[in-house]
Length: 114
Length: 115
Image 1: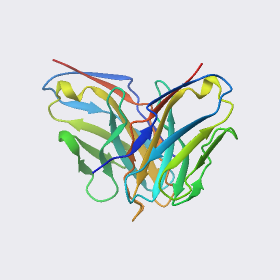
Image 2: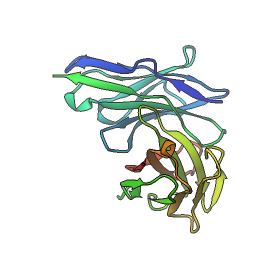
Image 3: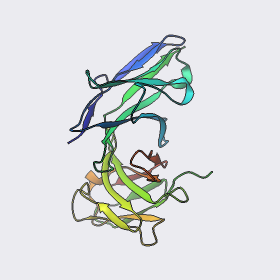
């Protein structure tokens, strides 16, 4: 089985401050990890993914995420948040050589305060 | 290029009715996925197609749900005898699995409301 946990329901951050959205995963095997963002009444937009190699992954719109195998975490980060980053963020995992389905967390609402 | 498209964007139906939701994947993508997103939750997997065949339909909640992809491109998710609990956003995604690392790209979803 594969699953992710996003422990916080909402993350509030002031514009210009660093943004962190937390994700931990559970898989039996090597994980492929993904972050997606969802704006109101829109579908999921792909931000970045970790497959293998460098633990620090850089993605769209200045976001990055760090894979930590010992802590089974894949936290999303942005050095300086923008008001336009306010959205719903989802972490997802699938298993290498497993089925192709993604298992999503429940999502984190990010609110960037001007 | 064009992304994944889904029609209709909104569907309101009455309990017991039959509905069809359509997904048009990114051109050339051989893999297609359906997910369901209930209010306040993350998407949940329903079914995965590789080409024309359903490679994994283990996420379909019961036999009222069925999906087809007859020509390996457009897919239709069919729900019979709809129930109020079927109300959700139905998301479609596609990917080009040249390797096992391919990213799934999502459409805007169809919001289904069962009255």
